[in-house]
Image 1 (cartoon, one colour):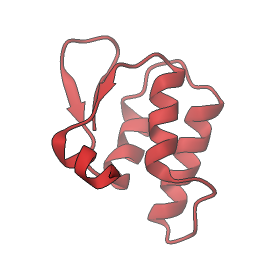
Image 2 (cartoon, rainbow, N blue to C red):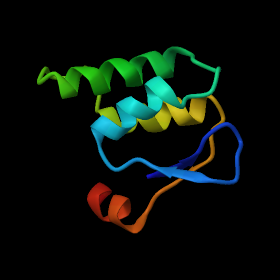
Image 3 (cartoon, rainbow, N blue to C red):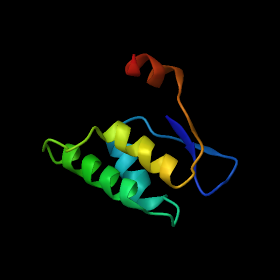
Length: 82
């Protein structure tokens, strides 16, 4: 998945749960609502070996939508989601 951070013209590629957690904690815009909190919790839980309450990928997409971040799927992401 690729997403625009802070409305810049550059996309950031997020390939796995570790990169999603890093993005959430270091590059996320100021709009941090309930979906952000759920995505952060899901990613960190998965990274620590625990079962997340929700799928980290779905949670990350919901967080991006919640704060109005533009995102797009790469071909590899689309293959994985089928």
